[in-house]
Length: 321
Image (cartoon, rainbow, N blue to C red; front, top):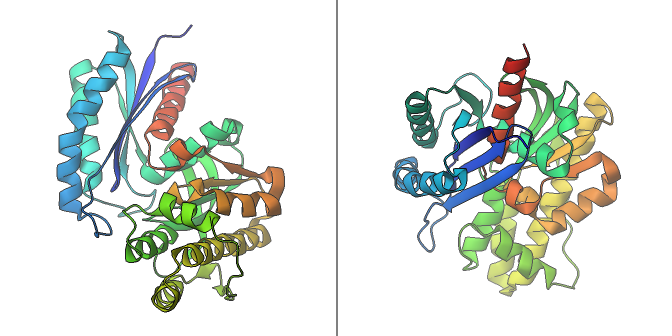
């Protein structure tokens, strides 16, 4: 049994994450510390997120140390930016980068940097048992969360994945729509799980709204306004929740059909926190069948498992070359 260990670190705007994986691909730990959000708030300022990560990282690393049981990691992977594009930057990733570089220097092991988005994609591949797609295959990747709503043409590379943006939202993100609607109705942030629970209790009819897609671009801010008015008029959180989630599912389907029209019917990988929603997944599975691949909920939300898996792949490739 391989006892060489790879560590992954991710410090997103929502969660401090540390993961441990053996070089033969066994996941040992998925350690997560949510960032605190005050009741009624819809997220965190970057300065507050950085401060929260600085407070969370020592306890997360201490938990990882206990699991290591004296074994030393052979490399560390870390998310250092949101996306693989020029100028992609968020201060919250500085916290994880600093921790990774400090640990790597102290242990004398390499540190590999990836984007948070590539980590999400790899987590979905790892969780769904589709890591073969990371071996030079083309696929469609969706990163749908509070900070991103993107459809990408993807292929593996040394930086994680080479991606080409095909489409996405022109205004707010799907996760923002869900969280803002939930907070409006008195639900805690993040609101995804609470919206889902309410929507699953609704059995009535839903108002129809056409999904407008232009050159791979959708708009979601108008739905936020409609949902707010619906709640003001009806006070029915279950109906509003079901309406918002059904619309998001339809919008993702519209984007996916657009991606198929551009790239052909490639495998489809759905990553990001929004993709843990059972209502949305059911709609997508019904339409795309076995070509649609999802992470389990724990690896749809922010995590460092995908980063560890990418670092493992980089390390093994370096050892073989």
